[in-house]
Image (cartoon, rainbow, N blue to C red; front, side, top):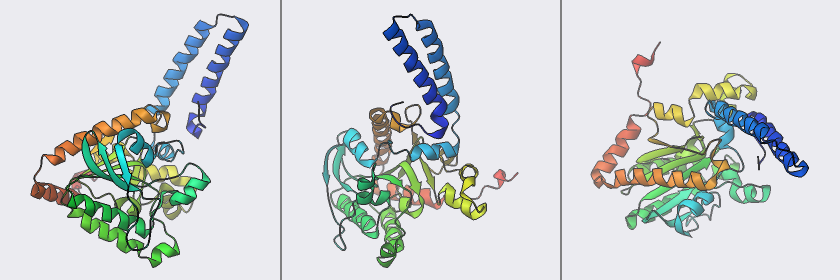
Length: 322
């Protein structure tokens, strides 16, 4: 592998190293080891199928947090064109963890907004580890209102462990900023498509997540609390995070089955970090497909369906009781 493997990927990385060494030996010593290489490659493919076709929710969480996973600006580079970034909330300042602006995707002029993480400490400090301040959510709403003024669809890209919980954010009313976004997005008179790229944590995700179509990348997660946080509450220890992830049904396949999301964007085998280009192409195709569905509706139909979509969240189904 060209990147550090996750813990459950170590057997794959070890086998890939063995194959690499065998090929090197064949080349340097002029020995025909093609049959041995072929056998090991078949074993590798079988091992990948066994691991990647049976990913647990906790393993999907680990993939969602991979530092080589494509972030918002990577999707902007590969799926969108003509991005023009806009800055500031017109009250406090600019939040670099929530970039946004005008762009085009598949010939559609849109406003795109999302969370941006960093891959090293310097960038993470600039992006605040993808956790937006109140001014980030107020900037997002300012851009959404701008989209409404120019009759442009809004696309939001969610990737955050949660909104920033610091004292400064509380002093500047982070809860109010998120709550106001929920209200205003519910009534925004242009199509909204939201996609969870990696982490979809709590109100920090929902603050730009009210949409006509809510999508998720195949190995993303969307939850009111992190698995570690849930484990700390219920089991009094973070080591139970895998059980918490399983119980909370936070992975894309589970949320799709529960009708809490509208679509799952397929990823390359092993996760989006293995092939940014293919992931971006899959994302673009699915987003454009769902955008076309929403654009066929009248404004009144769109707003009614958006309201009913979220009104039905959490409906109790007695048939699910064992």
